[in-house]
Length: 414
Image (tube, rainbow, N blue to C red; front, side):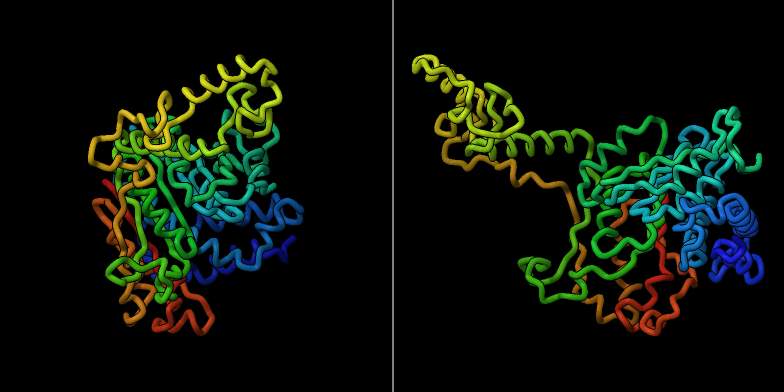
């Protein structure tokens, strides 16, 4: 299917090169021909196949491939500078808010025969069932014994792609738990291309929370300004001082995080005390209900009272969340002092004051600069890529979305 956009993208890159201001160094000189050969392989093998149409004939394919090249460029340079780290800590590459997985699929081919990349994870809030990703994995000879693969030897073997669908990036503690469960000594490198609104600060918070050893690399391309910036009259984004702020998570030690989550669990248990707790007599039997409504209660009044008494001892205290006593007899209550509430146990964060962003000559660049300052890494910089959007409002840097296609944030730990 020579008319598919995958062929047009390959021809455009081969004829005119990358529409970016990245320096033509050895890294880019090697990367660009590799990407062109990958696109031609995709066109030859998968052009016309229904499961690949949503990827290979996408109208924005060329632009998204260029954005992926720009993200791969600092990643490869960082990996090349740290050979010892790569040998000791191979990378799990994470495509944050992956969409259709163009970056993930391309990266799996770019890093063929490269032991530095152990696996690639596509992370998205949607259920990920992209058939082209499955097809790419099927066309992968990871053990040199797959007779059904069609990729040439230069693209074999490749790091496998794992789909983490139904993952809400704002559920930071759940995301952190999954990352921490990855096999060690693998480190994670996060790439987020065009993360909308508060997804970018949330991604920065996840990188901070993981710490520099566990997550030594981030390449982030924010997509647009959060509502706290463009709707500065909204009360929910203002502090007591009246300034609109965005909260960004910072590093939290594993022990502190464990203690905080335990306190939160106690709080959640205590909140269930008001009639929403699971009946311990039948374990809910598929339906949460208080024990006095359980169909398994005996008719004998003495037995019922004994069951209620034992249930009361197992229920959590409304004050501290611990079982075995009620709030009037809470041993954790200090005389004359209020008991610290687990509801107030929040993860550590910094407040990003965005009150002056719209006054800047380039609001989007100013916002990216402020966001970059919250990253807890050795080296953080804004990378001006030169990628542009043809729409007039994107060309005008004074517009609050002007330049949003061209600024990447790169943070590394050497």
